[in-house]
Structure formats: structure tokens, C-alpha cells
Length: 384
Ligand code: SAH
Image (cartoon, rainbow, N blue to C red; front, side, top):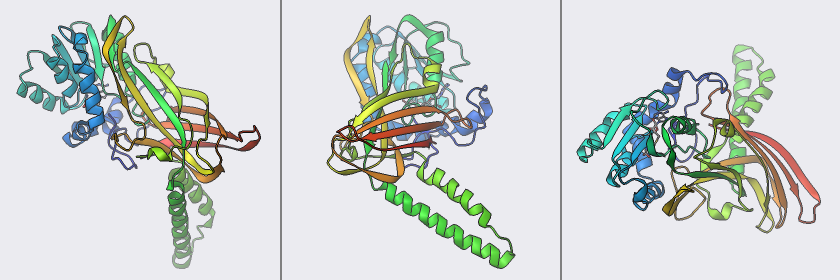
């Protein structure tokens, strides 16, 4: 999933912007509900997710091509939304499905379950998965918890909590593995953003002149802070976009791999990595970076999937998803050539203001194929 507020092209997932929730402090549930959950209580938003064919096909095939994991088994659907994954689990032969949903979407899920004659198998429970209690442990946990660039929304925390409390020691996670990817891109977005920034500054200058002329107050001391604020939000805020695969100009690198059966909250609270990407386009412009994710349904080692399924959100001309790709644009593009090495240091942590949003610190050192250093820079981005 991914929910509603965003500045991006896809009209995406939820996460809210307000918050006041410190990542180390306990989460204020009312604030979290207002900012994050409320969007999920609208059918229009669930419909966005249900209309994503890549997402739907992956989960559908994962369930129906691996019926052995479901037939006669108990299943927990974390964040059932409309109830779709719970219904499929029941149709694949589950004995009992607990479908947990925090929002009042639970009422619609209950109606859908009933209309599909599955109320003897699927029990919809409204509540946070952290708070509810089940009468038994389950064989399978299924959930669609992925946000932009995988971790935005921090919903995997809830899946971890559910897993540690309710999954049998022999249980299986759907999906079972997740990866985050990062790659250098070319794009005209940097130019667009630059002209947005120039426009905003021209507007400020007019505004400042008018205040001086009409009201006798000199605003010029605020010009620099305004420019810095604009730079921060216009240039350095992460955006969503549908990248064309041809915009990717270097080798995509994996910045994080996760086994959903063993991953811990501390492992995802801060994701740190050093990777190298090699430019594979001739004389091109490095304008920024694209981030995306994939998840796999492989079952577990002792109880593998009969048919492994992949859900990827990589740039593709044929298979776009509602997640698109997270785009990190640079204000000043850099000329790069084939074989240039980009040594990348990436630290992604949760925003102090809202634990469901992310900050990404990026350090990039560019070396020519010969090893000569070319350029280096450091930037901080927000994924909001
Ligand atoms: N499973 C559905 C919906 C995915 S969107 C589908 O695949 O179409 C994720 C859903 O999880 C949202 O409806 C959201 O309200 C719910 N959710 C997120 N965190 C939750 C939590 N801690 N407890 C219960 N529900 C949660």
C-alpha cells in the first residue's frame, strides 16, 4: 500500500505530513490516526490499490499458485483494507482467516466477505494489529505493507509485531523477502525544478518590494531564509515519478535486502549502505537518483513456494505500478561518461516530526573509469 497525501505524480499512499511523533518516542495514536490511517478508510483509496494490476497479479498468483501454503491453514491478513487478500486466502482453501484492519474500512471488508459467501472462514477484526488478540497462532501472515521506496509509512513495524506475536515457529510470510534498489538517472526534472525555484524567488522579490513600498517594512533580511526553504522543499524533497527505463544511466544497486521472517525494527529504522554504480550511458547528465523496491514470495527454506512470485516496482515501460519510483533530484546536474564510478553512501532514517516519513542523506563521490576523482557532493532529501 501507500497512502494519500503526497506531492507526487501518482497520487499515492498514505503517510500524512503533520505528526509531531518522535521516532524514539511512543507513537501518539490519535495523531497517527489523523495523519496516516484516515485515508485508508476511503474506498477511493483502496480502489487505487485494487486497480494496480502489477500488484494484484503478484499477490493473486502468489496465493493461487501456492495453495499448499493455504489449504487447511490459518492465516492472518495484516491491514486487510477491502479484504481482498483475506478473501483470496479463503478461496485458496484456508481453514480460518483473521483479517485485521485499523480503520472503518473493516465494515466494507466484512460486507465483501459476506457477499462472497466466506463469512464462515474470514473473520474481520477492526483494530490495530498491535492491540488485537487472536485465539490461536497462524500458519501464514499475508500483508501488503509496502510504501514508497519500500519503507515509507513504516507499516512493516506492525507486520513484525504481528509476526512475533502470532506466527507459528513453522509459519510462512507473504511476501517473504524485500529489496530496495537505487540507480543514477538522467531527467529533465532538475531543469523544471530549477525554473520553479527561479519563479518562486522572482515572486518573493516582487512581494518584498510591495511590502516596502506600501507598508514601510524591509523584508530583505528574510530573502535568504526563504531561498533556503525553497531550495530545501523544491529541490531536495523526494518525488514520485514513473521513470522510463532509458532514464536509468548506471547499474542499479541493492541498498537493502530483508528477510521478512527475521527482520527487526532496528534494522529498518535506519538503513545504511555504501554501494557503487557504474555509468553505462555515453556522455550523459547525472540529474539525480531513482529508488524503488521489489518483494518476493518464496515461502520459507523448510517450506518453500511451489511457484516463486516477484512483485517489482522497477522502471518499466509495460508494467507501471501506483508506487512509481522515488526520485531524488539534484539542483545542478553533472556531466558523466561511460565507466564513471559513483561511490554512494546512503543513510535513510525516519523523520523526527513523523515516524512514517523518511529522511535520506546521500553522499556521492564520482571517479572516472581511470580512477581520477571527478566530483563529490552530499545532500539530504525528504520522502514525504
Ligand atoms: N490488504 C489490502 C490493503 C493494503 S493497504 C490490499 O492489499 O488491498 C494497508 C492497510 O493496512 C490499510 O487499509 C491500513 O489502514 C491498514 N493498516 C496499516 N497499519 C495497520 C495496523 N497496525 N493494524 C491494522 N491495520 C493496519
